[in-house]
Length: 217
Length: 75
Image 1 (cartoon, rainbow over the protein chains, first blue to last red):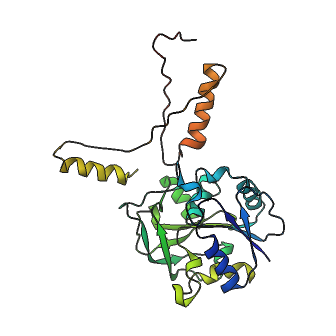
Image 2: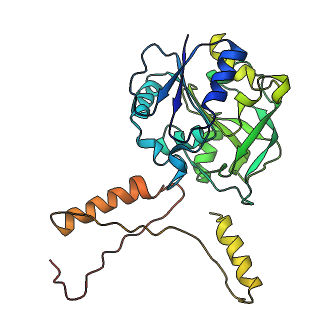
Image 3: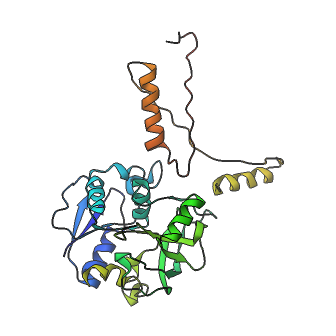
């Protein structure tokens, strides 16, 4: 099993994800430069956090047109496991693989802090290791994490069980306390918190480890 | 939809002593030069760009106005 990690100009959590997957979980990884198209041999793809293409225009707006994401779209549509963390979640919404959009935090501050969350794993493949309504803590680090969508869309997401991660103390004004969403197939997960920063007790707890380890079980 | 940067700027307007700013939203203006064989083609290309790249219709509205240059004949 090998996990691909997308690298855009401006990605800055790609190496953290590699450290967590290889060092903490024990899964081999391969970096995917944004101009690559070859995903052969990969069992999952992670779109990491950072500031892809400088976040110019909107977060994720330019990244959406990267050649590697054409392959990632086909991979996801064929049922492949795709994880978007922070900027990766923003990219997934810009691509339309997940609905809605992520906007400027309600009080404008860049938020960098541990955040209590509630997990509703449903059919999400990345969250198999968590129990229903489990309370966990993961770090967030974002200026534009306020999830927005139409109220009808939110009702549909809720009804389908796609709101798999919720803020216990909504820090950024997201509708429905949305911190993470999965698609109807459960193979794509986008979340604003950083599970790769919570894979070792020395650097922020262990609550992210089961998420990154979920595919190897 | 809440525009926190607009709200912060509105609050600053009051601190400057300008009361009565009832709403203030901050958006983007994009200037571009486009070569196209005719106006209809140009309009189509600009609509595509606006809808698929410049704006995210989930959170942003856009409008496109074609301005005639002074003295130029409309085709």
